[in-house]
Amino acid sequence: MSTNDYTFKICVCGDKNVGKSCLIKQYFEKVFEEQQPTIGIECQTKELEIDSGIKVKTMVWDTSGDPKYKEIFPQFFKGAHGVILAYDITSLQSFERMIEYYVEIRNICGENVVILLSGNKADLSINREVSIAKAEAFAFDNKMAFMETSAKCSINVQEAFMMIAKGIYMSRNKEAGGNRSKKEWCSRAHAVFYEESKCYIR
Ligand SMILES: Nc1nc2c(ncn2[C@@H]2O[C@H](COP(=O)(O)OP(=O)(O)OP(=O)(O)O)[C@@H](O)[C@H]2O)c(=O)[nH]1
Ligand SMILES: [Mg+2]
Image (cartoon, rainbow, N blue to C red):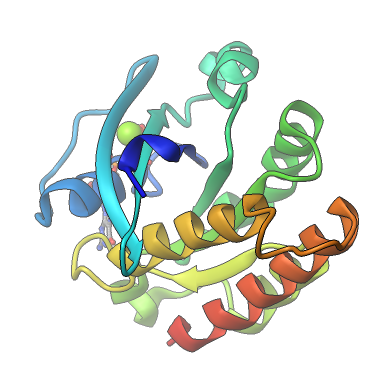
C-alpha cells in the first residue's frame, strides 16, 4: 500500500502557551525548543508507518491560541480528519476552554472527526491544576482519546500522533468495518481508540 493512499489532516488547537508548537516540533524533529508564538496557520507533513506496511502521510496544522485569530477557525478545521485538543495541566483555565473548542470542532468537522485530548506539560505535575480523573471523564463523555504529554520531556508525543493516525485509519477503513453501518463502525472505532489511549496515561 503506498503512502499516497492516505493523507490525514491533523489540527492541533488549544489556548495560547499550552505548548502546541512544541508538541509539533517534538513530533517532527524529536527536539524541545522554545517556539515563537504562532501567527496565522502553519502546516508540515510527515510519513508515519501505523502498522506493518501501512504508511500514512500526516499533515499537521498549527495555529495560534490567541482569541484574535478565532475567525480563521473555519478555514483551519475545514477537512480535518483528526484534531489534537491541547491544554496545559497546570492551567485550569486552559482546560475549561476545551469545551468551546470541542463545540466549534464538531460544528465545523462533524461527528466523524477523531479527537485526542492532550494534557500537556505533564513534567510539571507538581503544579497540576487539572486532575487526570477530570480530564479522563471529559474525554470519555465526548468520545475522545486522552493522554497526558510532555513536549519538554518527550513523553507520549510520538504516541499521541500515532494514536490519532491509527484512530483516523480505523474510522475510515471500510474493509475493517465489514458490513456494519457507518454509525456503528464509528462508535466502535471511538471505543477502541479511547480504551487504547488509557495505556498511555501516567
Ligand atoms: N515544562 C514544559 N513547558 C512546555 C512544554 N511544552 C511547551 N512548553 C513551554 O510552554 C510555552 C509555550 O509553548 P508553545 O509551544 O509556543 O505554545 P503554543 O500553544 O504553540 O502557543 P501559541 O502559538 O501562542 O498559541 C513555551 O515557553 C514552552 O517552552 C512542556 O511539555 N513542558
Ligand atoms: Mg504556537
